[in-house]
Length: 387
Ligand code: SF4
Image (cartoon, rainbow, N blue to C red; front, side, top):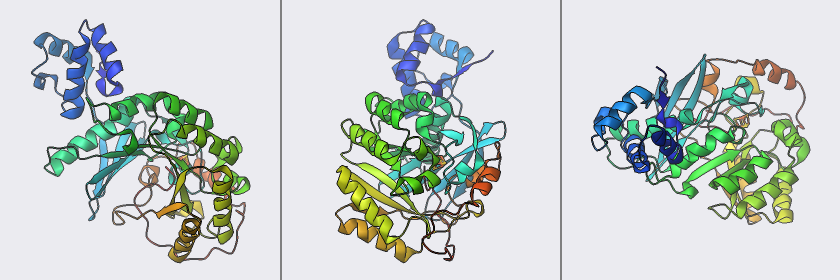
């Protein structure tokens, strides 16, 4: 008999499921707490549920994590998992501890259809959307694994960033129940300010997210003008920068933070010159948008044909933005000893849509070079550079 994976549900969904079993709504809250707060997957353990309900659950439901293909732990405490999602597809999640904060980077799709040039996931093409249960399972597994691994009883993961593989806003209907589970006090109880959706700029869905489930928003900008962004983030051809920034302004009316984070991956000789910094300053000034910039050292991989900006140039770029009054950070690299950017492990599993071949053809187009790119490739950080 086919059973339902209860990780598919937010609390509303679980209540509806329990009602179908002829159970009262408060039973769903108890069950939800067992699963998410205590990490239970065996209904027999859930001793405060009526025996009759446990028996019904045993025949109709299950709580099932994703199979782990690999787990790599860095000397700095960063842990990266590669999960099997079937049919030769795999997705990644990364835990990044820092002081009293524990951040989990979560994937929303197997592959990605957006095809950003600097992104390893984009080079793999798109396989499929993850289901809600597969998104939630990354947090469920990581939180309860880490409590045991680190011998802790309290919550380990304090922040979630939807910056793993995939464009979360192109998998909206699966994403939102998972976000609601992250936020629910009967589950993980994360603050809206500590759950971040990162998007390459799916404008209509930014508006929907603001209405349905406002959380912190990060936007993968990566270029200060449309011609360059058209090349780097192909979705820009559909939703150009002006439209994107207007959507960001509208989002701020709902957002739990009073700023949008712009992610900017620093690519040697492509988008890292003083004039690009100046264009960004003008963009921010002309729109008046409240924002922060996060500069990301690019994580080179052979198929991209791109190189990481030298550190002095990244720092000069950051200074130019900061001097103009824009709060700017440079992302630290973590877990250098375990792996490169998000998507690279999974890329070894399958390139389903031959995206790498298509990308290689695109690469023959010269990308507005400011100068001949020739810097030395430096070691790679572990986490995603776009999402
Ligand atoms: S940066 Fe994000 S949207 Fe772009 S290809 Fe990678 S996963 Fe997709």
